[in-house]
Image: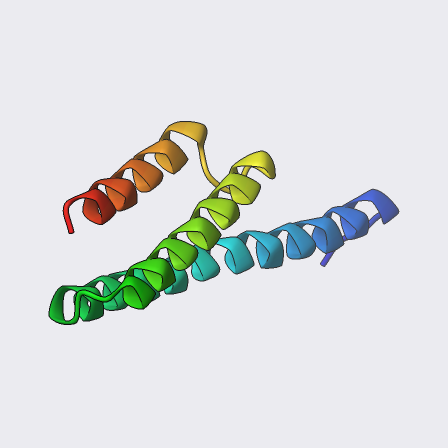
Length: 93
């Protein structure tokens, strides 16, 4: 247990940051899985609606990755790698 005021404050700040980091990481992971599912659906039924849905999910993944990078949840190179991987998959369909 913390003995002084600054140590107690650090515990609270670390908890807040851990929850924020976990939110961004899990959200990116969940949306990425959703993106892959929408790509599979588009491969089965090549309609404009399915492609637009995939594009919309991709945009939201990009947004979360960029916000996480801005808040130092992801390293900038790791974020670029994730975005490049997703865009390559989207281009190949």
